[in-house]
Amino acid sequence: STKWYGVATNPSKGPMVAEFDCPADAWFFKGASNDALMPYSILMEIGLQTSGILTSWVKAPLTMPGKNILFRNLDATAKLLRHVDLRGKTITNTSVCTGYSMLGDMGIHRFKCTLAVDGSPFYEVDTSFGWFVPEVFEKQVGLDGGKKRDVWHKQPENAAAVAATPVVTFALPGDENAIFDAATSSGSLSQQHAVRRRSPQVQFLDGVTLAVGGGMHGQGYAHGFKNVDKKDWFFSCH
Image (tube, rainbow, N blue to C red; front, side):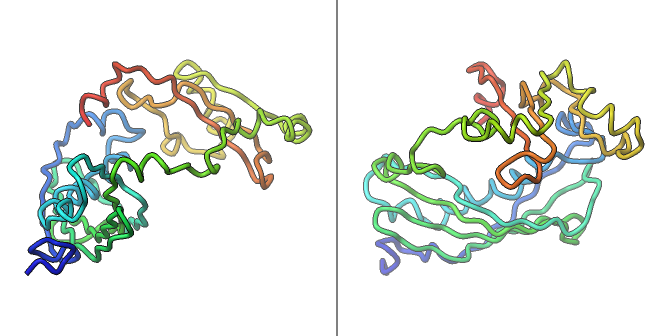
């Protein structure tokens, strides 16, 4: 049968189980703020990468018109059930398709992924991905409706609020310790909770601007930026 958008299997159903043997001396542990903590970006990738394999296995790409199609993550809701020291552990990822639908020339694929160690779950995520033809992808205008807007502390209409709020800018990595020094020396933040980066491989910011009581709602504001280098290590690893 080809009743499922022209393919011989139902893209909305299908499980996949994958395993990752996590090295105890992996680079992301050495670069994190604590040896026992896996950076969330890595944990998220372990949870979501199977979706890219599973969507192809259940033939979702074949529902799309044309050959030059694009695939990207759309959203996710995740829950860390408990903290686990993952060094030297085997992480089991059980991913299940929970739905597939076509919206014109766009396919939406939904998944639920559960990560477990020694048979006990510690992380869950519900997520959706989209298949696009290039024409649909190019029409996406972003969060600001396609308009280019400057950051909050540089918008002219916020000049009075910025002037009334202490705004501090740190150049990284040189000023990284200064971000935490005041809080740790006063005792309001313990050293173990200062999320310092310990390796150039995880230095994804070149500057940070902080404003206590700033922002659109006056509850605090943070702005970070990175100067992108086409030779950055992660481009060749994606």
